[in-house]
Length: 355
Ligand code: GLY
Ligand code: MN
Image 1: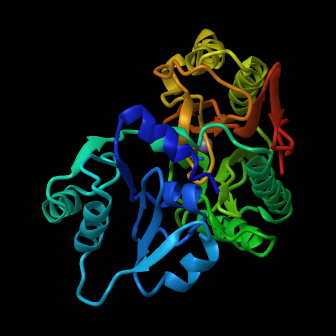
Image 2: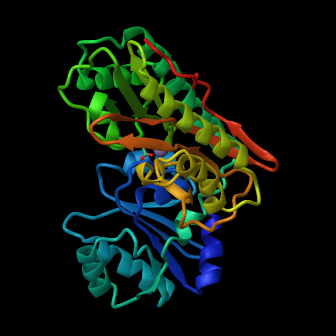
Image 3: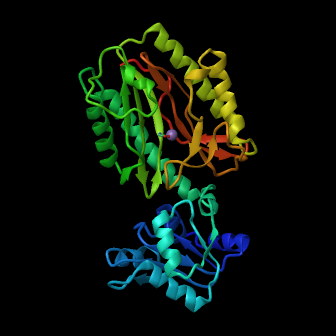
């Protein structure tokens, strides 16, 4: 596991120790999947404090850590305070972006005010560049998504509700190697597809509907993410027009991804195409985001993100056009940044499919 990377954060912040509470960061640094408890790391000590529901799992999954079980009637603050006292750790870094305010106040009180350094997103940023092993897990998760999309082309039909279609996608992924879903599956049909994050409803899919499916699954902890929009029946001229603009923007965005460019520059490439076609106001969200142990990670392909892309960073490329009262289109692939471009982990067809 990647616990050695925590040393960089201690050096940078001058903290004597760091306390990790976020589930993904705990897993990344230790291997422990339980997401309950805390990691406490100094330059010389690595502790995973958790409760009796998780200790067996923790010992198996985090062999590089000393697993300490919370005693009956002991609080985490008491346990952690005893560690800090023993180590003489006076300046402890903590995840201010994740710790609940109430938990922070309680811990701070019980640990004698030692939580002095706000780590911000420093631990999350350790996860940006993926190893070959992590990329292999992400690729496998996306491959399960591709299979699920192919399956949906066989089963989507008028009369099926959005909820039934979402259930079909989810059942397929979980019976083909997925351990979980990356996020709540989106199936949006007809006018509902103008809502980028519509919730699947009891609405029946009707002939001529756009159906947007945005879904992903988890494989070995790593998330996938893809979106395809199809037409059930024959596409109208307007549907074809919108679809082709989004596809053009998506292909141009993919072509712009490479090591050395900023996230905002890639976003601009796709956004300009949509704006030039007259639909600039109908694409409100960012072009993409990174993916890993969480579905949304840094860096982003967005107007606000000036981070320079590096090889091994994952990005989604997902432009859309959304017309309230008519419907919408989004097309999303997940890619790995390389020196001179990107490797697409998504292989599903992107030409307009009429079912
Ligand atoms: N695919 C869901 C999202 O990116 O928000
Ligand atoms: Mn996405």
